[in-house]
Image 1 (tube, protein in one colour):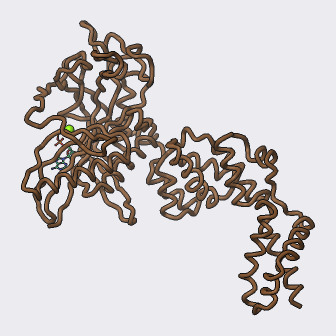
Image 2 (cartoon, helix red, strand yellow):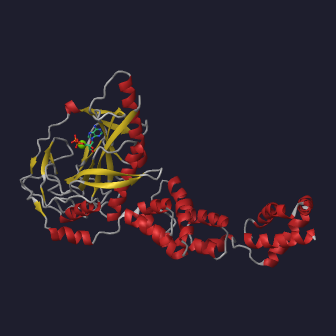
Length: 484
Ligand code: ADP
Ligand code: MG
């Protein structure tokens, strides 16, 4: 039997406003508990919400970026439930008339194929506070700093058929919201998180299977793992004669498995109704057009520009354009190094390798774009070879400093002085009797390959600092002279 997965995602993107969606309290991350919660966030009697227009502007930007209908009249609804971190007793959200309607994004898969994924809707809502279970023994603390933080909830159609497609979709949405500057995209801090709805069915079947929803996954890798695990779990369950129950599950990254949190039967009836404290939001065509005319460059357009302007391959352009900050970094390196291919190789190679290994985002890279640009300039003007440059980069990464400072301090300057190289070549030749014999005995057209051995010896003697081009020339000249 061949199974097929069906996946639909709900993404919560925290909007990068300075203040909350219905109050003037700050949204900055990491403050002391309850220092950024005002009377409105605490739901004190007599307080009223005032809508933050910046959140609207950001939601409209997103809608335009995914080619969606913008709701000309959108309405806030109350989603009623009780929880200690929700002092109002309801979350202000949008159910019936969201700000963003049907849209779509195109994703690119590893085999180079593309696929269109539908976005059902995106609506504005507020975040809840946080319960702290580990601070006080035997008690739970409530931190309301996050209460009232603006969120855009982006709901996809159940269009994805594999974990790979789901991750590509999440990356695309991440890339769009960060490019628009409406979300900082920081998954570790919870600014961008994902609920994964997964079901399975036999291939060829029309009807969807029963789905589960795994909540609040906050890394691309965990999204992939949680979905893969959930697909396997459901298939095993059905093949063993069981059936999938509709439920909410939690992903445990330590055990790499999902487990049940609550079933749909126990789910709340939220008794949604329009919020009487907030007027409907009515927007005019002019407002939308003004935002449309000022949209920043989006990932798809940036990718095309990179191919055109820097002559990058499709793949390189895709990798370098997806993340706005990586793209900006790359372009700064190109400006300094004046060589797009070299810059692309280093940003996608050495730099990305170090970022991944240290779990560091491009924004926190200890090597700045200017520093890397300066290093590439020294490769291009032959001050150092590519191999030595990797050593310089290593020092730059761990100790800081400019390429010139490190080259100077560590004495890594390439030896290009032909007199100095000749002396070393002479010494290598005099010490390599058998290899020289072989060289002389070889057919002239086989000799080229044999240079490698002598090259290696010269590099060893100079600590890799001899200019490879110069060494090859001198070696050939001297060895061929011995053959006459
Ligand atoms: P709810 O309001 O209960 O969260 P929705 O109908 O809004 O349910 O769907 C939530 C998400 O679940 C959407 O992203 C949708 O694409 C996805 N979804 C719906 N049905 C299925 C299914 N059978 N399998 C996988 N995903 C699904
Ligand atoms: Mg849901």
